Image (cartoon, rainbow, N blue to C red; front, side, top):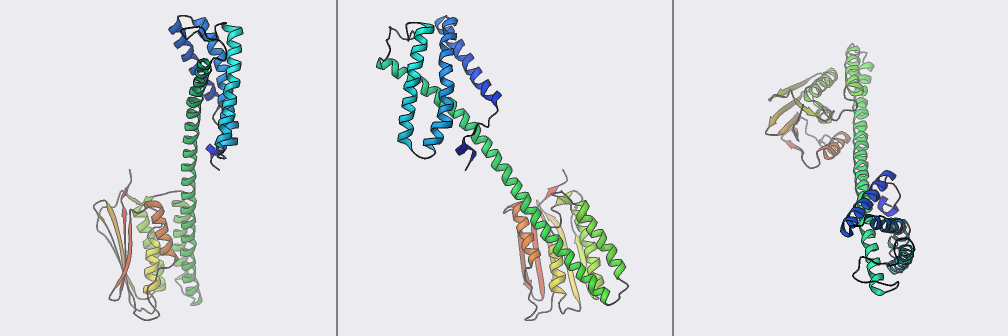
Length: 349
């Protein structure tokens, strides 16, 4: 149930006091100047506002909640009419005994209680105040609710994005530990070097990018190069080429947004492939950053490149960050698997 449906008294008390105080002052000055009688205006408005205020809150927190929100409009109308008649009785009696025996001095002639014109005038006046005050309150409540919903959507976005990032990181380190395990079984002297590079990668993930939405592209490229060096220790014959065709000094990207694409190239390109070739192209075209990675693979029924959890999560992250303002495509051409990613440029500033 929304905050408007609950209609809680959640606007600060001082704001209510400011509203009614300002409204009373304006009304007092207006009618005091109109009749050139500020004493009458003060007494008259004091009586009216002592009835306006209870009626407004009684309508908002009792009648609206009990009948309008439950779509019982006939009951609401009857209850409101009874309330207006009760206000009429009180206003007429208080005006007669405290202010003036002429219960409606604003009119051109003297009126007596329960005359239809007087009843209609008082009820219309109360409905005017009721509508104005209720409109202000409901508008403020709606604005607060909209802000809360916006904040909730942002928090949900951050939680979902963090969840996807947390899925990617264990997935990556799981693969790397598998590589390390394979080398340890061979009693390879490469193990210490792998552990050192893995430590650098973990430092980047755990400290350098913690709590950041965007990181410098240069750092991401360094991260990718460290990862590639680890993979080169596992693959005997692998050739990796990285082409940076544009000035990328000031460009920022979401952290770990490219690593799944690189992992995919090693994962599927390295199967039964004694001469793995990977090429990474990164360049700026217009207001887009183009990241492309190609890898050769051995064509067989058992080795058809597929999208794993890394690529799926990468696409979900891109969707959350850029909505539809990105392009992620993959295709095969001859014995090459090609992934192309285009994202808007996010500058340092």
